[in-house]
Image (tube, rainbow, N blue to C red; front, side, top):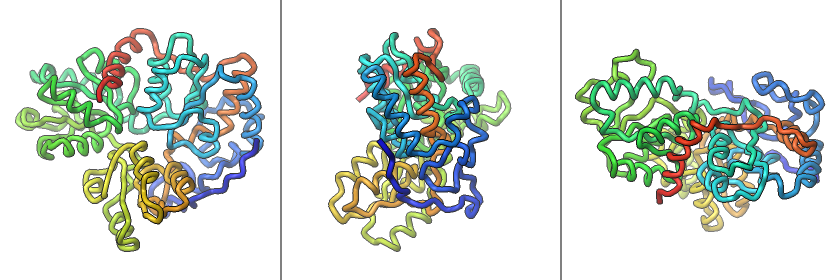
Length: 404
């Protein structure tokens, strides 16, 4: 089995926009040693993998997969590069993949081609006999890192001291550490994804007067607005403020707020602008603009539709032949959608297109290393959540999976 894919959408040099990209070489797979940001990735991968080409890596992954048979399942997030998605038994957004992990105990091993918080969720939801692995342990999430558990715990203590905690339901986005999912499980809260955020907020408001939503302010704001919550009742908690400052809010603002938004964001979706939408409409008056709800509020308002990665996939798939779509989400997904819908025009809103810098770290070399070691009877890069954390995190995740 060899890889013959060509780069579908070129990526221009990020420096032209003054914003750092993980790569300025395009989305075609290079040998690991040629990847510009390799120095920041997991370094204990054996050197024999460093200079292998995409075709060589594809052949080696295929051989190891064949040896492992049904004992191994590979889950692939939509944002993964093509040479990873080619081996995914299931692909989807974090919600769809979380559901799969909870419902399919047949495989002994799950290799999660995503980022660390997703592998944690898979470990929590999968059966006890299943082992979850992440090909590159450096594949984290900058948004998740913006909600440091100690900062969230401190915010909750402040809210408790101010007399508000018993009125608030904590809601953490899937893009967060397992410890924060456990925090929600302990405190009557829940997890959400971009697929079910509206249903989860409805669930929360049925149980409390207010919601503390973290770590992505934009998903929280856009979801709240869609549900009719006024913008002036969604206030921002600045976690950089010193303890006792209520995240920069007054008691009056806190009392009035229905949704307390954590000051976090996605670096990929932060790039999309109203100006880009206007440029797309000028070039194609009949364009349909679809964006992810992690984009800024004004971008979502200017778009024709918005939703999760799964929503974006379905919107384009259902489009009539000849229809045109400008998409505000990660480039590997946009490129794949353009390739899979040749009867439509599909392009990224941002002319300087950057892959998700941490998803991009799941290079085929790491996948080859992981599955070849597994075929040899050795587990590398296991992701295992401690029992206490997993117990309470599963409470919050199970609540999420039951919300319709």
